[in-house]
Length: 128
Image (tube, rainbow, N blue to C red; front, side, top):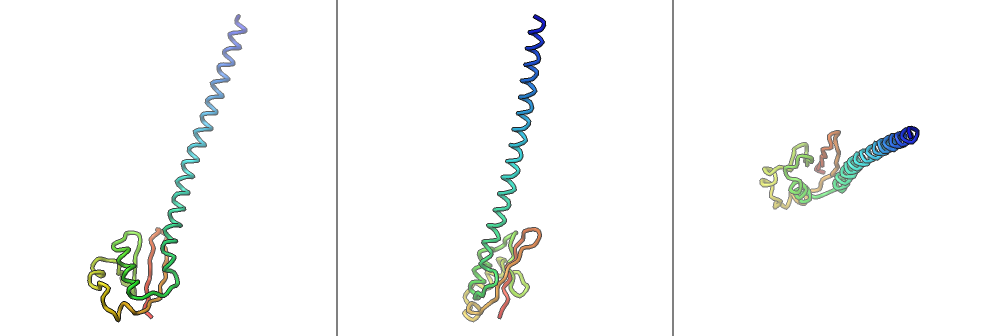
């Protein structure tokens, strides 16, 4: 009888150890999956964000397009629109300009964009 109880105890301990190891492996795989999803989501988000601004890279736009860009990204914390070094995506600049001066709106600008290490994008309009 003692032999059977020792064997049953060994089987129970083996099952408990197997369950513990299996649970640990599954928990670790779940954590790795969650971390990967966060990293992938962040990577895709950054790519989408930069692709949105790629239309401004090495193009020529009018003053009206510059005004519309400043208006679109008004007071953005992650994006700066500049013209001649001055930040123009502010409420004050947009209200002062209001997009009605024909000489200004038809003027052409070379446009480029850049992203700094913090992920902040700058769209630069340089008058021709």
